[in-house]
Length: 385
Ligand SMILES: Cc1ncc(COP(=O)(O)O)c(C=O)c1O
Image 1: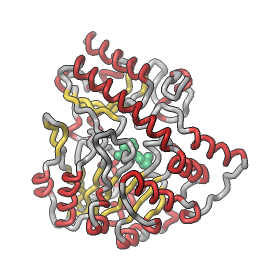
Image 2: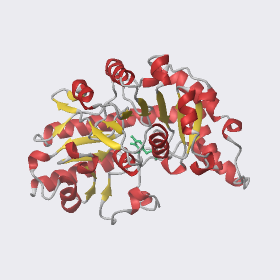
Image 3: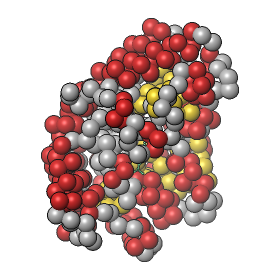
């Protein structure tokens, strides 16, 4: 059995939220975890720690060596040259977003967000009492596009942050250099801090390629905090660790205003796992990305031939496919419809903001056999409506 032949009974033994949220007759294709086995260097690194009962307080960020390892990797993969002193560790990306919003904006200050969007972008903004400035991406015949003029028109003197998601969840866009340059120009012109969530950076399909917005110029870097993580690409979200890269010292200082211990620390096992992922996991990731790409193509082709009233753009990045089922008028919404009639658990598009009404997000990071089962269940539900 290879890593892509999965036994659904074994998956159901998992204790994470993906496989425990719904009863056993439902196939979960919602939260962004993959179903594949983790890379063996990661498993071995954790097992080694455990075999030595090496679960005491871990070493600090610098001594862990992770900032250097991270710098080397982003230089090789994204042509992005940064130094270790710019890098810090957080428990997770969403935590670092909250810190960023608290650090660089005040109550009522505006935060630019491109909807539809990964829901914590909106909840972090409202929970920290910042103001949502929603700039919907435009769903054109060629795919999702940015309306730069609209964005400019929404920014005022109390707008402080561009909370960027690139690659973008849920649309699967990997923004081009030209798009990033225009976004950066808007940010600089309005003195916005860019908090750039690039958690899906390693999951970009050719011919697209990931460009960290901070790599565009020194000036852009000085306005940017970049957030990355091994969690999506290496399927270790429950291990909990994220990297923050401060393009300017002023941003690091602002983040440090909150006492460090309030962030919690990264764990001994996360240091072991992420070190192994970044130093020995590339073969696994390359193979996984190829498999994901073939799943993506299969799914897009299936949608084109069988769900002809659906609007769908094949994602350039991520293992999340975004479908507009609004033309089918499923009641009360497509997500509830497919859960009830297909026994497939998808993410409800409405949670991604107003433009997501009538949409679902489908996680295709599973075996082809399970993915085929998902789509044939959905076909059956559509036919029997
Ligand atoms: C864009 C984006 N940011 C952040 C996260 C969550 O990251 P973390 O678990 O590190 O908070 C996800 C998870 O799916 C995501 O898609």
